[in-house]
Length: 353
Ligand SMILES: Cc1cc2nc3c(=O)[nH]c(=O)nc-3n(C[C@H](O)[C@H](O)[C@H](O)COP(=O)(O)O)c2cc1C
Image (cartoon, rainbow, N blue to C red; front, side, top):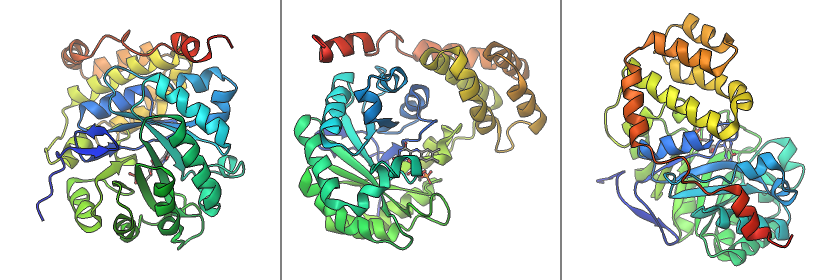
């Protein structure tokens, strides 16, 4: 079978330019991550899961997750919750924020989320799960996608009964991460379930779990018939893997690594503010500089530095040529002002309270 990852496909009426999707990851999928993912060939990027309750209470930090950059499209914003009216309202907010797709989280295995009746626990309450999809699909004209696990318990095949029902309720696409919620991230993703799901629904299915290379992407697409593969952990601090998955050999130079990290730092500071970004970025230092790319003591020194500016200076000292790569990246980036401003967004939706 001749499989081309650079083929276009459609999620609802949204054209997705490649068969590679960047996974939503809480604490990772900030705007900088998504923009970078698009630049490196992801056809679709997704926000981390955004709390519907947080949106309802106009929590400032939650609303910040709805900021959409001009160079992110096509973009899905993922919401999680368990109340149909609140989900519908959040979906309208997602639409107003400028997203192309509303994604619903039926896969989060974390207790804090499942105990509220949201995330993966919805797989055990299919009637309610369908009501939520229907409420969201009715509320907005955007395509609605659902991301789910195989089920709650180990060995569960619930996704195969719930999935088709979610499509009937209005889902235009399903993403399956075929591990159980109990499994968290242990064991392996069983993509034979993805293949079964593909055979049961007539909407595109996205295969998520353990896709880390071109060869793996090809085999998952060939054996499942999925429309696209989703890549999560392999892309943390490693946008080059996206190019490799698309079939282009892509080992970065030291200068490229440092330049991408510097751009990531700048974008993240702009998005989160310096205080929040300082702590947030520390895990990314290890991810970018790991994989044998930089010596361990260098990473340790970087994490210990008190400010982002110190980290930037330290990085530039290690790879002075990165300055020129960064200049090129900055000249190619769109104007940061070209993003949906939350103030106007709130006014346009909540004008009059
Ligand atoms: C740190 C982290 C955070 C995640 N957050 C989310 C999330 O917010 N929403 C979601 O649907 N999945 C989330 N996931 C699951 C991923 O989207 C993906 O399905 C999973 O990691 C398997 O893919 P991978 O093997 O390519 O990492 C998260 C995974 C990780 C590792």
